[in-house]
Image 1 (cartoon, helix red, strand yellow):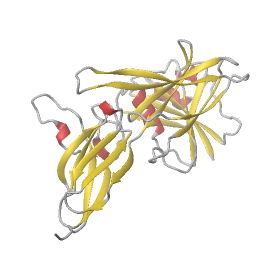
Image 2 (cartoon, helix red, strand yellow):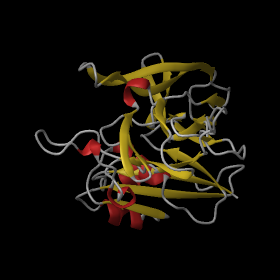
Image 3 (cartoon, helix red, strand yellow):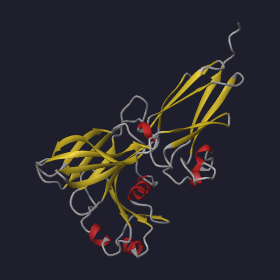
Image 4 (cartoon, one colour):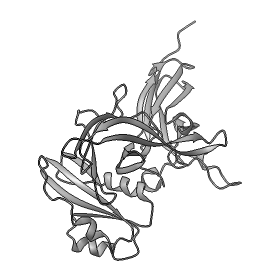
Length: 316
């Protein structure tokens, strides 16, 4: 069953929520079910009461205001029952509404050697108009001291159909992990916007076996960029080995080390961490956050586990 979930992030929207909901569809061709999802981003007014009165199907309440990107991520990652494939629409205001859905190709996003494919669908655009598809990201360097800033890149030039619709396949760029914007623009005017979250993926560990002192390389992509999301702390058999950051390499991280220990299987674990703590105190990036599932302040970053088989050294 294909279910369309229309997300409406809200922050103190008791006066406008009903107006936003009024034109939203409950039926569309090719969609089995349409549901509305409100993400309350720490509102202090009666937004939740208005949402219930308007017949909202799902409500997610964030304990405090966390901003648009995190509200959107909370909606995408919410567990929605009774649907084998979800398409998400994100409402940014009146006018055109865009939807972004992953193609159902049977492979998880970020599979090594395979691009992440998506389909961008929209309606309500000026008929036959040329528009640009813009990818939003972050670029810069913490190491150089120059900082970082939002950057945008044009992915494609598109032409709206005569009925005001867009239907365009696209390849998601290899980039930093976390939330990225996809905007439809006509000149300098943004007509609609949706979001895509890149998650960390494993490219390879090579080799996977060998004697002591064998050089080993682990390759990751999609490592994040914020202080909470851009670092992994590595352990070897539960002993601290080091840390790696992904920001300065646009999320592409290569970790090199040498195999150690007696013959047999040895475990290499990567845990989420926090890049920087208060000055003059313990620097948190030196510590693997073992409780990451419960209280990591960033996105829901997975821990990663690898195994290396140390083989007996050849006799001399």
